[in-house]
Length: 98
Length: 322
Image 1: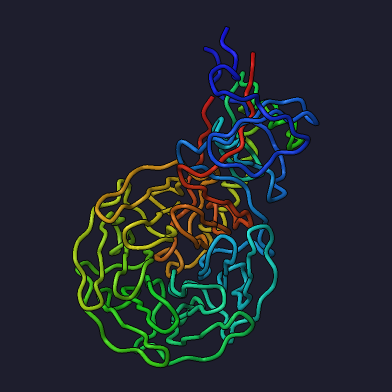
Image 2 (image 1 turned 60 degrees about the horizontal axis):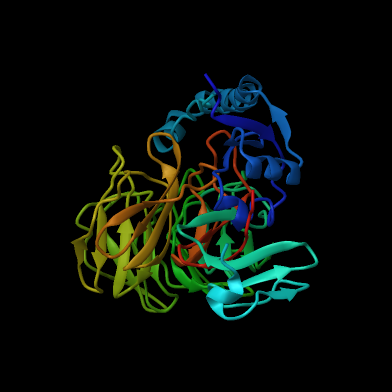
């Protein structure tokens, strides 16, 4: 099955990272660990990856980056007091789509 | 093939830099060799703004995209810091007197006249009110109850704060120096958001606690009445706008969400999602132009800021000829 998305790692430097001509042409989604998802086989998305100096990751590589951060956060949460847990939700897994 | 001159009666202007034009204008940029036009955004869009000085969640917020404010929150540690936004970059403002997280969010109409009330240090809730003048914070009248996670609306001299931990239905109104009792919320809740004015306020979402709430209520300066439900119930979301034109952004809908919804005074419509799902962010502005900064992705706090551009905004676009 052809993949719908491609993943990269890129640091969001702030203004200019996602511009209006990017945002209105295709969907950019960000995840923990500076992981970003854009449509696969999309000329404009590829130009954006080039602009932000994105490092291409496979879906599994991107998932591993996100999972490591989520797992650390879940472990930190599990070590908290019941009072803390009553006010805060446990960080949930973030499954990435192919 | 038709020619532009035959259709329009004149040639496309050749320029060396993009001009400021009205919607619908077309020109050829000879410096970059591209044909461009000034169109309009068909739907709302999110773009990147300047990163905050510190990644933090549960801050208070006020102001507009070009003159925004974020204060307090949890870095950790608890923060008393204020950051001011100019639409491009965040800079340091005056520190609050009391470090705290989850002060009333959102209250205060501008960067130079904001109001913070309540909040918590994790073990105790506060009743402290502080007023910002664009430079420094000064003490205001104490809130009648120590609380956190309230919602607010209005300005520094005509504001309201409601709900929150403890008595979930309480509303109090601020006149610039002291708090007086207002009408009770129809549905008590906490970790929700508000916007608008004291006499035309809006609150929505939250927890009661749990489950998440989709309920919206309108305030007329005296009492609350029901509005249209959010499409996605959530808590720890962000808000901006007025009672008849508001945005609901991100939050926790059971997991961290990037969903955006826009309110027209009657019902909520699903809008373009925020690029990064986060909860407990700082927001300010209108449905035409807003900022959304900080918050938490779940695993970690974020310093990222995103700008909202509402549908119909001018947008210079390149004509692509494949």
